Image (cartoon, rainbow, N blue to C red; front, side, top):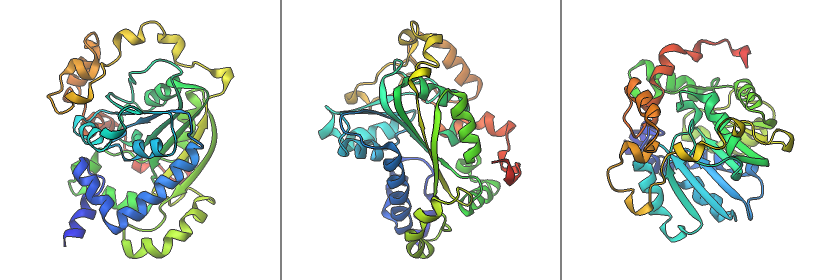
Length: 318
């Protein structure tokens, strides 16, 4: 019974929920397949600066460091997740850093990172195109962007939609996607899409996950249709070096969100810490959407879902 409760809560936000999910058989198998695919797309990390957008409890961020990255930064809008991440990696703090921030307004200068990752982030972001543009902006020329998202046409997505219709608040705010939509947003941000791959083709059941795990990479190389997880690798070419940087190069550092010291992550977070003291427009925008200043991921996409029921799009759209 306890395991069933854990599986039902999987992916429903909060560091303790994520820990329960990974401790389950289904969660362990699913996480290993997704992480293996993300690391493969990220490529060799030795000596590179890596940004993990929407880092959550820092599990993947820490893995990047273990794979040899010179410096890794985790960025997330949830202060509770950030506190958990710093607690798990305190011994490696010289090579890792965590900041409060939103994917749509990354608090970094142009061309700062060799690799940028965003895993199951865009599905909970209202301005998804803006978020991809921001990732492209902070990526160095020749750098690599890796995005992993929740696939729309899978049994997992179907069950989550049903739970949303039955009143589950978390999945009511999720926006599932397709490879075509990811490609369109990435190309619009000035990046070159290198490849796609799917993962997690088995149903939401550990009994099915075990025997199907060896087949999952094979299916992923054939099609993304039916995949609960879709990964994309893109590159920023030197000829398109600073897509978004030209529009805000000088003023960005003046309005970017403040860095929150690791020692203060267990203290109350103020709007100025999240948005920056001069960025009143962002705070007003958050208030208009009924979101708290910490910009909870769930609440940030409320207005998006009211106007965009992407579930109803025909399967041949992407």
